[in-house]
Image 1 (cartoon, rainbow, N blue to C red):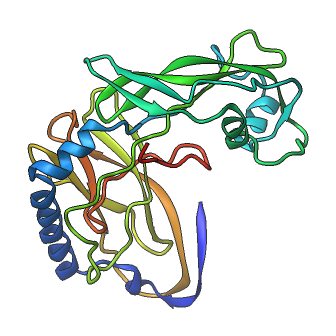
Image 2 (cartoon, helix red, strand yellow):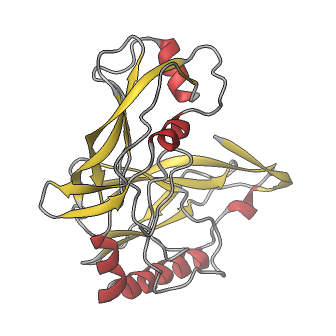
Amino acid sequence: MTVALGAVSGCDGQKTAAGGTDALADRARQVAEAWDGPTAAAAWRAGYHPTGETAQLPLGGLRSPADRRAFEERSFVLGGRLPVTWPRHGQVTWAAGGSLTRPLRGVEESYWSLAATRVGGEPHLTVTGAKPGAMRVATTRGPAMVPAWLFTLEGYAAPLKLAAAIPSEAPRPPIGPARDIPGHALDQLVRISPDGRSVTVVVLHGVCDDAPAVGVPETRGSVVLSASVKERGGRGDCTKQAKMQQVAAVLERPVGDRVLLDARTGQPISSKGLPGISPSRG
């Protein structure tokens, strides 16, 4: 994905200089020290924070390219009635033990987080109904069973599942954002590998830069990620654009329940999930 930012500039303007890289490393250590205190990290670990998909396709996946395109473009048509009542709260239950009561998203709100518009174009998927259920979601505390809406799709025997539990709001960071370090904050968490040893994030960098690298200083209670751009030889003019790129960082040991942090913002890195789904204090 490429995002246009403006005029033409020299490619060197996109780089993180050696001094900036050192400053970023120092900043990462400061963020780790701040979060390794007892309050913020404990509050983060106590919450429900998804690190994987909060929507699951019908068992076996979507059958045709047209259906896959409809899902990707969020082209849905409501061809039946949705429930008018539902539980307002539900239990998130972790496989490793423990549970948490969370407010639940209503069925209509959940449906409209799937559907981009009220008029489905072609191709589209038709939702014929919905009922409450549960689904497995990867979280910062490991896998959990989470209350979900099970949407029935025309032509499919198995439902499309969408997590209904609203994620916990991140605690107030014990350190403010950095204002004097070049580069961009990490955009979002994409995935954590099944063994917890690899973390994939979205990085924003200039189109004229070499591939970005993600630094990963680790402590007992946190993993601090920071993106920098590798030096490129030569100079030249290029359009002043930025692009988003997925970058995987390999860890020395599994993430476990450690908090993933952005060095520049000082805040946890979270999965954005579907559009319109945001954390809550509830």
